[in-house]
Each structure stands twice: as C-alpha cells, then as structure tokens.
Length: 447
Image (cartoon, helix red, strand yellow):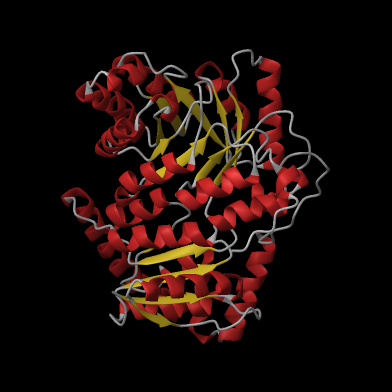
C-alpha cells in the first residue's frame, strides 16, 4: 500500500519508528517530514499528508503530533480527506469500519511505539463494508462538498484569503495559548506508585501499554501526562461510601482515565465525576461469572444507565468447561449487545487460571464472535493471575479482529509487566498502579 506519513517535532521520533515498521511490512512510504526534533508548526505537515491522500498520491495517510487533535482538524479541511484520531485499537477500527477514514492522526505524547504500530496495522487492514456505514460515509462526503463551496464564498468576502502563512501561524499559536495547550507535569511525592516513579510508568507506555490500574491509598501526585493512562480501581467487598468518595476525589484531582467500581457504586461515581473527562467503569457478573445471561444483560444496562462507559464482564467458567459454548456465546453476547446499545466498551474476563489452553482459545474465539473490545485474563479473585504465555495465546486469537488484551492479576514486578506487554497486552492491571517501583527504579529498559 502507498502510505504518506508526516510529523511535527513532537512526533518525529515516533514517525521514525513507524516508518521503519511500515517499510518492513513491504509498504511504499512517502515521508513528508519533518526531519528533526527542531520546533516546527504541525499544520504545515498535516496539510502535506492530507493533500497527498486527497490527490491519490497515497492511499492512506498517517500524521503524528503531540496529541493528534490539531492535525486531525487541519487534515479534515482538505476536500476528500476523512481524518480520524486514534488512541487505541478500538478507535482505529471504528474510524475505518464506521467512517472509512483515509488518514490517521496519532498523539506521540499519548501512546508508545508498540501500541502505535498496532493501531496503524488495524487502520490499514480494516475495511468499511457494511451498507449502513457506507451510506453514512456518503453523507459525510456530500456534507464536505457543500461546506467547501460555502467556505470558499465566506473566505472571499471576509478578506481571510489575504492572510499569509506567518499570519496563520501566529493565530494558531495564540489559540493554543488561550486554550492551554501546554502539558505541564504536576509535582509528586515519594511513594510506591506512578507519582513516585513517572519514568517507570512512561517505560510501560513506550512498550505499548495504554492503561495502568491505580488503587486507593497510593501516595504521590500522578503527573498530568500519565494520569490519562490510569484506571483508578476499588473492587474490594468491604469498600465503603467514604472510600468510594475518596477515589472519586482523587480521580477528579488527577484526571485519571477512569474509576472502576462494583455496580452499587456506579451512579455515585458517575455523579461525582460529572463535568470531568474521567470515565466510569463497572464490573458485571463479578467475580464468579455464574449469573445467567439475562441477569448480566440487565446488570450491564443498569450500569450504563447509571453512567458506566466501560464494562468488565466475567464469563460463565463452569459452562465453558462443560463444553457448552453456545451458552457462553449467549452469555457474552448479552453483555456486548447491551454495551453496543449504550456505546460502552466491553472487556471479557476469562479467568485464565481456571482454564486449559484449549479452553482459553475457545473462549477468545467466542469473545471475538460476540464483538467484544477486550479479553482480560483475571478478576484477581481466583487462584492465579496473568502469565505472558496466556497473553500471547489470547493475543494470537483476537488481534486480527482488532481486539485488545488486558493483563491483570499477579503482576508484582517490573519484569512481570514488561513480559505482559511484550507478549501483546495493551492494558495492565496491577495494584498501586505499577506497585513494582522498587525493582523498576533499578531497571534499565532498552527500547
């Protein structure tokens, strides 16, 4: 495939990695700059990539800046371009399946090299085939044609056409300043968590992890640039309202990715997080998975109505081990369909410690058929947790469908977590975020 790629100074290093990755896969890659880490303006390079796609010089485009947002805005100004920003496999797959996106924008400050390569792979190998999505893409194209004509007339009558590139650059810089585009790092204190060792967390992110789990009572302020990777979690049975309110307050302070709680606390959490960007996550059928599909569906829909945006459901392990795959598929479908109706992400917990390899493959295939977003190793309540071998096996089954793998349970060291990510995990669940910094502080990772 012919691919145009570009980046600003913040995306230069990631562009180099992706360029080598794409060429190694046999793609023809047109590198449109920039060529160093010296400061440049991203609109220039986003425009070059977009024009290469619009002209047919490239079939797809990839543009990288600090966050991916600005470049997407610029690229979508070019007629014929449908740019989509992606920060995980699900958003990359959605951009292609639902919107037939032809240009991908990435934020180098938001994802690591391994995850970026996986996102690009999904973007290049996923097609928009469903008629209902194709019809909507046609509407997008029609809207763009109409808007182009209106914009041309408006620019001509306003005098904006007389602005130079330097004028536009100053305007963009001023807007960025007004919108607070900087990425300052908050102060942090000593303690065994992300706050005490942000460089360790960043190493996980560079490996490809896009989410870490952070538990209550973890000291230290999490740097702002890392907080969006953190699921703040409290699932213990004796969690009280006061404890839940504490993690809500911590999530508001740090702007974590999500707060994950048992169903009875979902509305409390969603209400407490209203007005923030922090998501609410709930568990379903937790931790045994033995409720009926109908009850799990009701539990899912109730959690979503209460405000949950992510659902971690536990499969019926006994039915799987009995060979009743039809029941297990119906079990998972009950939840994934409720999640799709409610625009929520579904993670399927398969409890690997209780399964044989053959059973792990079967249930991953079932989760794939049910169109789940993730398969996840463990609840943390069984006899064992994640292993690198399980992660590699699970990833080998679901990756082609654009699904992701979360490793959770028993991850007690930097070496453990690195093994999981190397094996294919894109999310890591570990107590106290990465409750492993004593070893990690001594580790030197060669990326």
